[in-house]
Image 1 (spheres, rainbow, N blue to C red):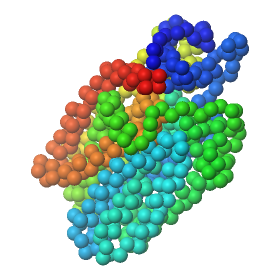
Image 2: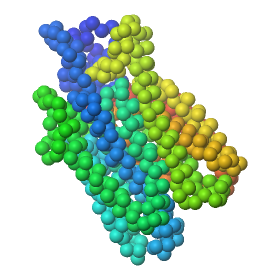
Image 3: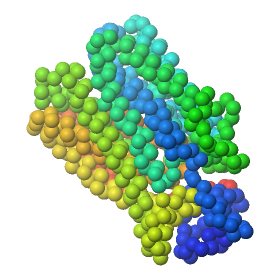
Image 4: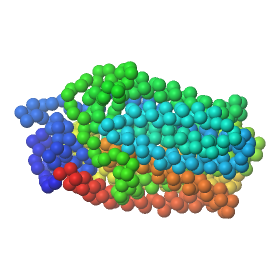
Length: 542
């Protein structure tokens, strides 16, 4: 492809220093490397006759429909962490029932985490495939989870191997809902509000690790360990039914902005969320790149993707280190705590996740609009016009004025990372000194808040850098996070036994400090890597 700068009559009135557009025979690549179809840009201003056209929204769904879809997907995403964490309080009981040591029952946790990381690579790539889409994957995953829970609830206590196998199947069914949820939000959320919606969509996934142990402890203590799996079976079955009835297909290579009808077999039974969404004869967007597990592995050739995924995985793993060591840490401070008391202590983490999702999501969107308006004013655009364009999410106007989307998204990250390191180190030494658990709970709340903020910023940037590949990118993110977390969880107890809890979390805080320069590297070099990737993809399309 011979890319060149060409004048565009549809933007003749824009400032001469507006972001350049590299034109192809059917696709444009804007300054941040996001592919934008030519027809979308032509509709951005005037027709060839000079007539004004009303701006087209990013999504054809109404505002309330978008939020209902976000809530439906966030409920589905809840089952990935819920199915993993609800199991923890029952491990001693299951060990007794199967006449196995706790170490062998912990193997079911390890294999579950491995499948949690690997399976989204398959489901996520299918969710980005135009012949499949998001909706069938939601229903398939929830159905598989439901059936695996039936098997787990009926597993004979003489068949330990079956328990391990079905825990793998359970993870394969539940883990991918997080990746597909992020992809769905990417389909319907404009860049200027993507941070808020990604944060809201992650609330379920953030609350589940905290509510799961509480629910699991209550069920195992009162109804037996099998009731945990019957509970998951009923819940996942109900959610699968709701999504089959109401959830529409959103993949933009199938439905475009939502106005293009999906295949008949891929439509909701009751299309209330499609009410008022009209078919205007617009073509679906072309898929960007191939979508399969091999391509997901190939995506790790992108340096910027690897940096962002690693800077997501490190604080996530540190947080899981706090969670997995919480029971012995709290019992050392207050030996009178019961299992139910310990389960309730997880609620502080949940509250931190909710507060972080609500606060950081809105902060990300507000800061993006502020940075965009400031960049436009610097280019000579009037204040009123800059404020109006700051919320423009159409075509090339999505990132107009933004010189580096990496710097714009990550510029608040030093605050989040610095606070997180201070909180982690403070938590370790507070636990070492055996202060009251109220102090530890407050620090856990603050740690979860900061991790949520870091995750929201990084996830939003990933959606900007890899448009149309939301589920695949999130699957890669899930793979790195789960495998890194599994490694840390397997060794954190040995570190605590060797150097104590204070020095353990000091070391983990130092790990975060050593990781942060990678964020700075992405801010400095990310634009160059992105533009190189856009050029290579453009040459492949030529």
